Image 1 (cartoon, rainbow, N blue to C red):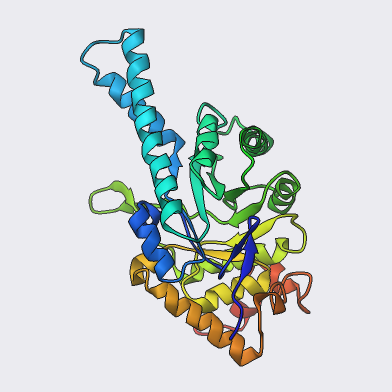
Image 2 (image 1 turned 90 degrees about the vertical axis):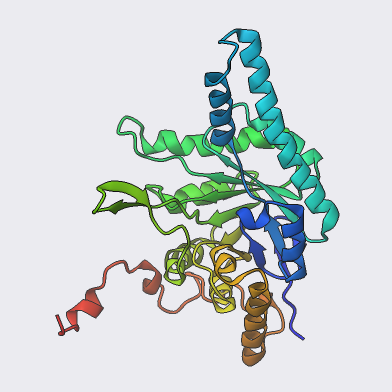
Length: 329
């Protein structure tokens, strides 16, 4: 019998499959079902900083009493408290109903008032907090250094409030990504999650409208994740979780080989239902048995950038060899 246990964010997980923050994890009942189907841990659906603020503003606009300060303050307080109370209940009941680690999630873009929520999330029993962060670099007047500084400021402010471990789920939109993520790992950060999967815009040419693209990841999306986990796993001073494009147990094996401690899965479960976790675990076990591995540590990081014989396979970005030999054009 192979041992699938792994360490992540200071917790021992029974296996490396973490269900990523999504509607798959938006109720205690769903979290329990994920545990029953074999999940090693879950990240609860995110509490959105901007969502809370938009709801507050909508209440103000629709307030029939006008714009008196005391009414606005009450509506603002009530709306925030309602959102927060619902989320705290989700954390508390999910922890009470399961034995696996339950990580809370905040989708944040600034280090404003929402920071105080983290303390209450800790009190509700969360095993850790994942900061789902992306600051769109679309302002020509804002430098990359200014944007990157915000990540460090948010982490510093959060760690002043809580003692539970903090992970940061990030994008690959950094000018000097390796240095940025290594520097983040040297702070009081427990884990980095590579990478966010974003809303993708598309164009309807018939209606000439901007529409939503595919909301799910595809198996091919794992390539960028593997590249950067492979690059970074020998340099960061925190755990790594691979996210985006993990659609099978064999994808999880790939991520572990490059140096990940765990993987986050969402799209594959939307498509195949929570019971698919069992299939993924069986695939990992079958592969390990075929290779003669008894534990994840036996092969974790075996194919990281520092350990492979041909590190250029991680470095190459162009298709020079392929297209130079391709004659059917």
